[in-house]
Length: 228
Image (cartoon, rainbow, N blue to C red; front, side, top):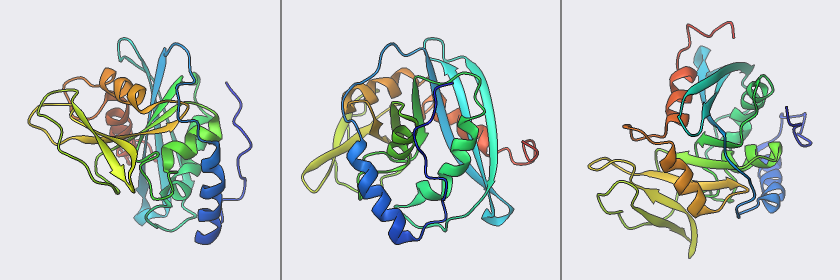
C-alpha cells in the first residue's frame, strides 16, 4: 500500500480554517498527466446514516480493461463537519480516507462522485483526495456546482468546456445519447482531456462510469453494511 501524504489529523476545523486549508492545498494540485499505465481504477462515494451523524464511505476497485469489480471497502466515521456547500470534502474525507486505508490493492486513479477543479476555490473533493494520497484523481459530478457551458452534441463522448471567470474548470460530458450530461473535472495529476477519456473508458450502458455508479450502490446499502 502506498503511504498517504501528511494528512491533517485534526478534522475539527472551523469553516474559515477549512477555506484557508483549501487555498493552501490547491497550490499542490498538478493539472497535467503524471501517471503511468492504468491497471486499477477506484470509485468513491459517500452516504450518511442516523440522520447524518454517521458518514459512510464506499471505495470500489475495478480492473480498468475489463471493468470487473475486484474489491469493495466500507468505512463508517462520526460526522464531524457541518454541511456547507464548497466545503463538503471536510465532511466526507475522514470516512473516505479510512476506507482507502483498508484497500488491499491501491488504485492507479480515483474517480470521485463530486467535484474536483470545478469548485469555487478550485479544490473539490477529488483534488483534496488526490493531493492527500498523491494519486491521480478525477471529479465526476452529476450536477453543476458553478460555471457556464454550451450543451454538448447528442453524441456519446461529445463534450463542451465548463467555464468560470474565463477559465476552463471542467468538461460537460455526454456519456449517453438522449441523456443529460455529467460534469468532469481534474482532481490531481491528470489533464482534463485525459480525465474525459478515462471517464469514457469506464462508461458502459449507464450514464455514470462504472466506478462511481458502483461506489454509489455500495455507499447507499445502509443496512447491509452497518457493521462495516
